[in-house]
Image 1: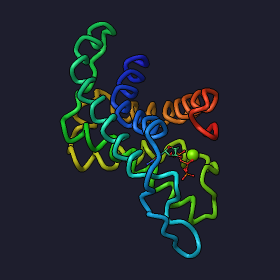
Image 2 (image 1 turned 30 degrees about the vertical axis):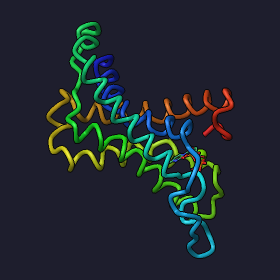
Image 3 (image 1 turned 90 degrees about the vertical axis):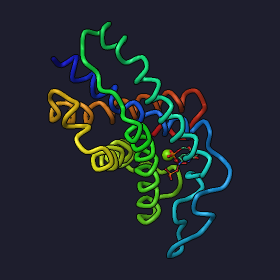
Image 4 (image 1 turned 135 degrees about the vertical axis):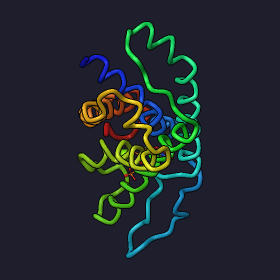
Length: 182
Ligand code: CTP
Ligand code: MG
């Protein structure tokens, strides 16, 4: 039961987890805010680029479609039932993840945090919250009709997401892919 809840939470959120990591690898080029400032501070900063956002969204969407293809085999092997991603969810999950991260940078700049400064809790959850907030109205019923025990899955998402975020960013930092370990 716990295994199934964890498996479903991870599976459902994978298309929202991967975009940020893809953006780290793909980032660079023109910043979304075009260098604009608001009240003396950058609107978003150089860490949010068009290329990172586009590649992150595309990689997440492609992953969701890939998960749809292998889902039945994985579900069989694990003995659990896994959700599939309607095309709209395949896009709204990664797009929401990128928007959440952009919103967090907007808030970081407004609160005087420089690019790369840590913003505990917000850094770890922004992408998951906005990914689900965008997907819920975009694909009505997806979350609550798909999962056997949606509240348990939600709890798992909010426990696993920070742990995974800390873990993967720590690894990216150790590999020299990221400037800070958060
Ligand atoms: N990145 C990007 N576009 C995005 C998100 C991330 O290009 N929408 C790339 C940038 O190269 C960025 C790196 O991924 O520097 C790491 O992402 P993140 O930690 O979110 O950005 P920071 O540089 O730390 O900036 P901020 O303080 O605004 O979060
Ligand atoms: Mg950062």
